[in-house]
Length: 78
Length: 165
Image (cartoon, rainbow over all chains, first blue to last red; front, side):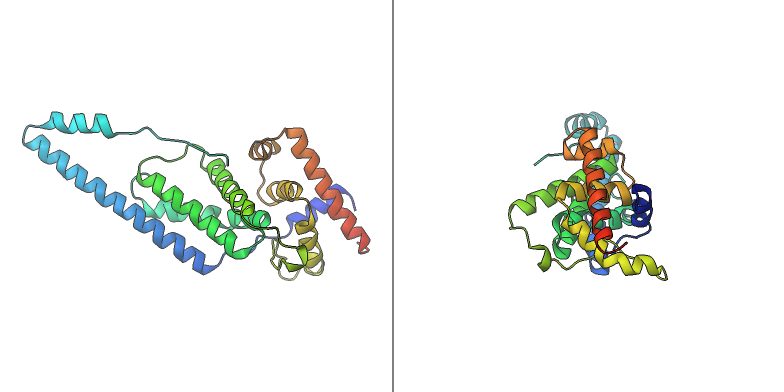
């Protein structure tokens, strides 16, 4: 059996199934985390609009300036 | 998927879950621990996304996260003897008699490979990763990754030969 033949043989196998329990855990916990983030973002937006309406828009601008973080790509090698 | 799009998160999970699960299985050789690793990696991603910090190279981030978490867990527990390992890293397609017949043999031969060879064979064969990407994950040269792949295939071929294939 040569390399091509064994590569073809191996590629014909598929990946083992993921348990429905894992799917459930990841999707429910992930949705909860992202849901809380969405709520937080909405509250921040309402607060920002309120400040703008009251004539304190510069406060929202200063808050954004201090708290905004750039997209972050970080991989830690252990 | 920045700040709370759970539909996009579910799509990403569906796209990568089977591959990352198999990769974790091949490294850590425990079904429960592989599931925990995949869980932790995706929850870590959700937390990053909720803070508006999505990794720029998502695929690389996911694979390296799985690898790091597996390596970390493997350091904390003794390696199981091969005879005590009962898991499937590959699944034969229904109706394919040849592959069904060889599945157990190949599965065992894959698990018997040195870890770094098994890793390259798995990532190259079922995940279509380039040797450069695999070498980056293993922190070695492309030539070494390629050699590990060839040695791994040679051992699998030999194992099939021993059994008259």
